[in-house]
Image 1 (cartoon, rainbow, N blue to C red):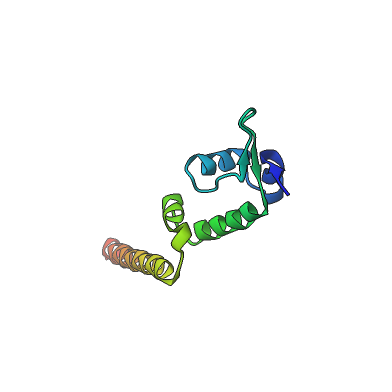
Image 2: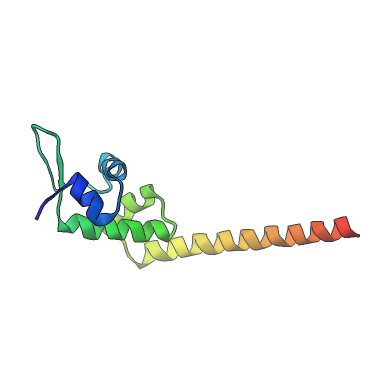
Length: 108
């Protein structure tokens, strides 16, 4: 079954503007675009793909990373993102330690 962009937006709870943007950047291409009206039609496969995109965004992937890795999404891509997040955590811990040290200096 094919859905017009407005219906697809309601089904997936995703703004039409976002769907158009995803289509424009090649992230979520409609199943069909009417050559006369320009209407975009989405199918069930795009629902699954959009859920994957949303999941990857929740995990901290940028839209460029998602687009670039969508067809070869595997353990190495996920491990690389995990490593990036672990590095961010280490950096946050370092900054927290610096803040605590600075607080101690201000009190002393």
